[in-house]
Image (cartoon, rainbow, N blue to C red; front, side):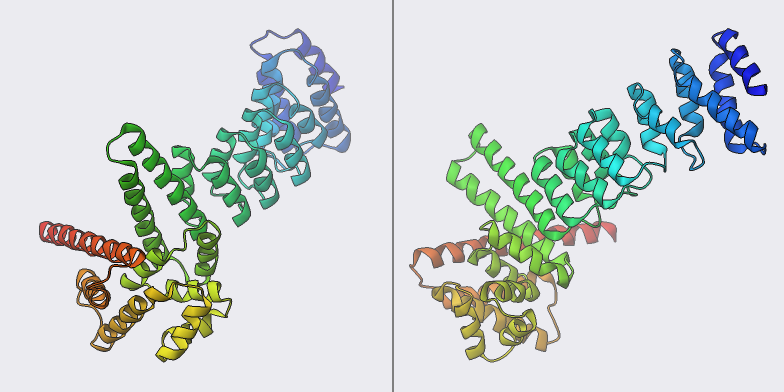
Length: 378
């Protein structure tokens, strides 16, 4: 009887009072301690109000019920098919939707509803995968920035493939602490290519010079990324570089001269198809074992002495108590390699020695900047 009186009243009430009354009814349904008959009556009244042509009434019901696990499921399902603003409110909050329903919604819904799903307090890996594959730009951006979203490695890769050229999404991906190194490197490469194309388009420098500069900038960032990566992530990073044609002799020599022996060992393990522990034992052992591993990895024979000299220098510096600073370490490493190739005329080795000279100059400039910063801070 109470519910019938309520429906009669709300049908004839002033327009400004009707949404408030609908909201109060929904709150009462969730929080009032009443018998089953009255509870069923309130649920029936809420169901009837879903057909009310007044937007504000339906929105009020959605606002009251959306976050509660006790809300009537059929009411929320109906509201999820309502106008965009109402549907988005429900999809962003309600814990009653299962992954299968959310995946179907992502596949068929317009961007605002995808954004709502991506913004939920908790987003499962399955829903994230659907958004990564078919989500619109704004939805994927919301997903990447959602700390409550579980995003699998393969989904992060798919997002990087689809949106890696868009600055905002690229920055959002790079800001994630769980971004795998190989995907981080993919974004670095995309950014490097974009900068190279811009330099060529603007004719700021000749095309071959632009390609050299951007390639070496990408290599420098990759070596730095490898140095910061966990050892268990290095194999995936190396495999990504191999597949994309970036695992070059120049990159590996730069890494060794920067002291990142672990990355070099991981690369040899992947290239030679041997366990990483075995590769490390050869690199750190006798010269004959290292040469055999180097040859099996398919690296150029002419560059073997360069790697050997760098590794010998790294061992000597370590035995002497470690590098005094990053710049002196790199300078000693580069000088040791260049000493083996002082009179070289071979094209490939010429290119490597030129790269190393530029690398040493970069390190010198970095050391000078560090000195100035420390002096200013003091």
